[in-house]
Amino acid sequence: MNKQGVISLGEAFVDYISIDKSNTKYEKLLGGATVNVAAGTSRLGVPSYYLCKLGTDETSQFVEQELKKENINIEFCIQTPNKKICGVYVHLNENGERYFHSYINPTPNEVLTENQLRRELFERSKIFYFGSGTLFQESAKLTTRKAINYAKVSNTLIAFDANIRLKRWESEDQCRKTVLSFLPFADIIKLAEDELYFLTETEKMDDGIKILSQWKIPFVFITMGSKGAYAALYNEKNIFVPGIEVKAVDTTGAGDAFMSALLCSFHEKGNPQDLSQLTEYTQYANQIGAIATTKRGSLSAFNI
Image (cartoon, rainbow, N blue to C red; front, top):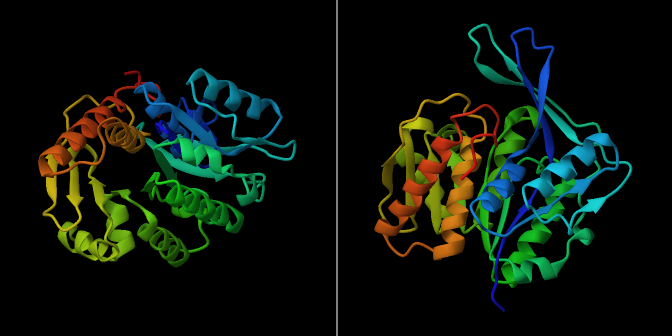
């Protein structure tokens, strides 16, 4: 079978982006890290599948329409009238800079369950991607482990982007232990620099990467915003690839765009065989991540 496509598992969000400093008026946008990656891979020409639970109300209909606009296949999603879509509110501070204000999840127990996954999707797809955005919920954690199992037995590459949002977790310790427990299953991991330090409880890049090496993860990427990114092949020296200079307007979703580009490279060209190819993949991801910052919203500028 000629395996094609990237599966993204997670929760669809609606981002409510404040449009003035009063933080009372919002622009409504499709959001969520895993949604951003699904849209990103689709825009880059890779078949994209999304796995989540959707509701039937107006907000769910908005999400479904937006996913379809992005040419994301949602035939493996589950729909239930009880499900309410999560909301993320992004406010403006006095300097006009955006910051994460609050996360609203009206139905935290309404998630895709492990018996609602279909193995056939993993057998036909090249890459399975997930994040930590739902791993605080026990049923979602079990579903993710089942999806990982399906990916393993189907010889599907597994990619994990921690994308940590501590406000969703009961404690930092719970978050750290849970995220670390999933690292050994991944072929590709992406962490932001601060996430690396948080997870490894270190303060230096080399120290953090050294600790990560105990899990023998084949491909590791550490993003540093506009500065660029570190990348490492297991048992090889890590490399640093400088960022692309652009006039940034909104950094929301830049990391997701970076991940989308990485997955596209792995999907289209296979696993990087040496540091030269790893550099090529990272440069491309830096470029796409930079482009994503040039307009407001996590998907607005990502029109490649």
